[in-house]
Length: 159
Image (tube, rainbow, N blue to C red; front, side, top):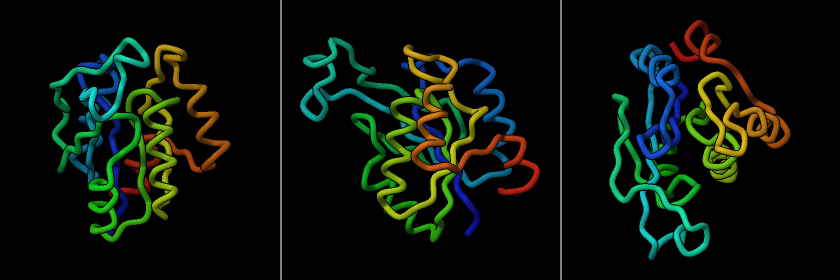
C-alpha cells in the first residue's frame, strides 16, 4: 500500500491560511489522504474549564479527502489508527494546523501505534505561540527525525 497523507485540523476554527489550502488542494489528487477535525465536547475534553477556550462544536474540513475523522482533543482517535492499519500502510505523512500541539500529538500517537510518521514541513502552521511552525518542526525532528516537503512528496514518494 502506498503511504498516506494525514491532514490535521485544517478547519475554519483554526483559520487555515489560503496558501495552505491551495498547496493541499494541488497535492490531494495524487495522494491517499485522510484528515482530522477537532470539535468541542466539554464532557470529553475540558477545554473551557481548563483553558477558557474551546474549538467549535461544529466544523468541517474544506478539503476533498478520502475520509475525515472527528477528534475531541489533541490526539487522533483509535478509529483513525485502526483505519490506517487496515490500509496496510506504515508510512504516514503528517501536515496541518498547530505543528507544536495537535500535529505533534498525531506524531506521538502514530509512533506509539507502530507507524512511521513523517512531517511535511511546508504544509504546517504553528499555534498562536509560534505561527511559523518552527518550534513544532524542531520538536518533531528531535522525537521522530523524519521530515520532508510537499515537493519531495509530489515528485518522488507518493505518486
